[in-house]
Image (tube, rainbow, N blue to C red; front, side, top):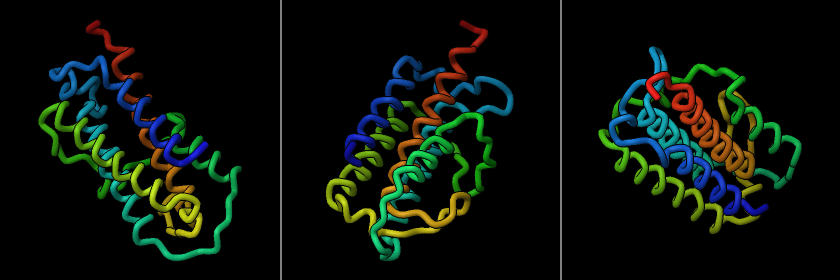
Amino acid sequence: MSFVSILEAGRRDFLDATSDISPERASTRPAPGRWTVLECIEHVVIAEDRYLSWIANGSTVSPQRNQDKELRLFTTIRSRFTKVETPDVLYPSGRFKSLGAALAEFKAIRDRSVQLAEERGELIYCIGATHPYFGEVNGAELIQLIDGHARRHADQIREAWDNDPRE
């Protein structure tokens, strides 16, 4: 599967998770200590922008594909069973006041990711960065993290609202 296909599938999954959320519900905290949908979207946008900057400014490394590592990174970051404390730099600050604005920003950042994947193609394996949790990664592995991270939060949105007692 191409990097663009991966990112587009993740986009569809994320937008699907938010498709039945009303604008009012998007700003409602589903439970104490849980993020609102707007906060989830903001966090995904911040993280994706950060990963894109790592790809754009990463070091040059010898290209090496490790499909097992790509799958492990995607699976680990996507899993809601893997609990990770959100670093302050990725914490939502209430930037979005409406669901429409938040989703527009998600679509824009995902467009940038897709464009980067189209432009770099297989050369994305030649980009290296250091992830604070996963260590040394290449650009392709960062694409897997971008996709898995958005899908993790799509699952979080579904989980929060599927179990909503107000329904």
